Amino acid sequence: MHPDIERVLLGREEIQERVKMLGETISADYRGKELLAVGVLKGSVVFLADLLRVLTVPVELDFIAVSSYGASSTTTGVVRILKDLDRSVTGKEVLLVEDIVDTGLTLKYLTDHLYQQEPAGLKVCALLDKPSRRRVPVTIDYLGFSIPDEFVVGYGLDYAGRYRNLPDICVLRREIYEARE
Ligand SMILES: O=P(O)(O)OC[C@H]1O[C@H](OP(=O)(O)OP(=O)(O)O)[C@H](O)[C@@H]1O
Ligand code: HPA
Ligand SMILES: [Mg+2]
Image (cartoon, rainbow, N blue to C red; front, side, top):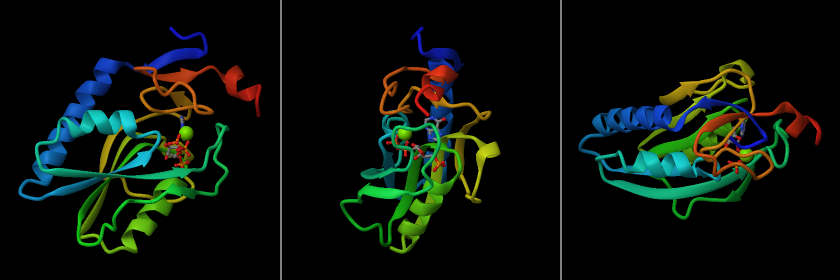
């Protein structure tokens, strides 16, 4: 195991099983429709890449990049768009794909931003939820796992840009981020 990791919270097999179930549910709900999956960069890329390959409905793909955590384990509270969608979502069935919902500030900002463009529908799929940290109410239509209030990395999730490549979702040792903050 990586020396900066305290323990594995969700192993790769458990993640794959859950992603498969989510993909089947989403495919059944959208049967007969076309979907625009919007990945939130950068954290969602690993999850989205796995989820896409389980979907059986026609899917288009776009990305939006926002950042609020920077090199910290706590949010700055200010969500900034670093890269907007290539095309407007007006009239589309949009599935917004997130790796994690923590305070909810990012998701609230993004759903407000997308609703302004009047999509035909907008649903949210998030792999992880930390409900105990919520600062604004948000709706997650498709959720992978609800997790306790611990800072996790791996499977796309980072701390200060690192650890996204770890194949499991892991709890980061406190001294790694407490030393810097
Ligand atoms: O619910 P919140 O408290 O807003 O936190 C969740 C958001 O924070 C992380 O993004 P981050 O800003 O770290 O960008 P990244 O995806 O590039 O790592 C994560 O990917 C979510 O988008
Ligand atoms: O636990 C987390 N890990 C990585 N990024 C995050 N962004 C919000 N919470 C987290
Ligand atoms: Mg991050």
